[in-house]
Image 1 (cartoon, rainbow, N blue to C red):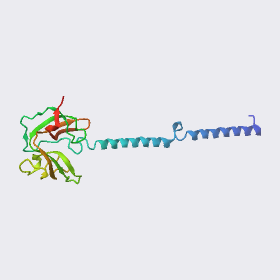
Image 2 (image 1 turned 30 degrees about the vertical axis):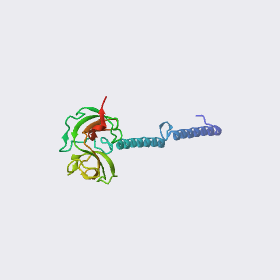
Image 3 (image 1 turned 120 degrees about the vertical axis):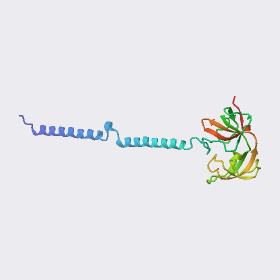
Image 4 (image 1 turned 60 degrees about the horizontal axis):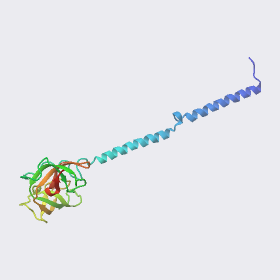
Length: 214
């Protein structure tokens, strides 16, 4: 075997050392993740995506929190109160489609509705303070005479006091109300379905707040 002289041996050792160092450098550059990606960057991206998903879920939950009922009203108004009389020959019959001019709540005015009940009674606008600590309600439309506790003979007069048995909205039932106005026109329950609300047997809409749908 041919021996290398000292100069050639030193050159060979230097070359081998250079190759080893180059290999370590390449391995370190690619070590943190495949393709040279920063694992912290990937973690932050995943966290951001997860956070976005949680935020979306929260938004959906909040948006559905008051699904059905609108502005405190129940989605289903339920049956008419006991003792109320069905209207004889109302202008609008059950099943008729009407357009509402009432603006008791956002999205109601101009909405189409289907009549689900028509009644002859005295209907009142009232002001009251909710029993659940809510803000005072002024000129609430409407409650009917049969939804008042021991009201006596109809009609009550403006300024009269009465206890409300209706539970159209939270804090209404049991509240002491002041009569703001009264009307004896035919009063209706209606079903409403729009992009903003869907309500069944909504109480109440009086005849002057309705017109035939075209």
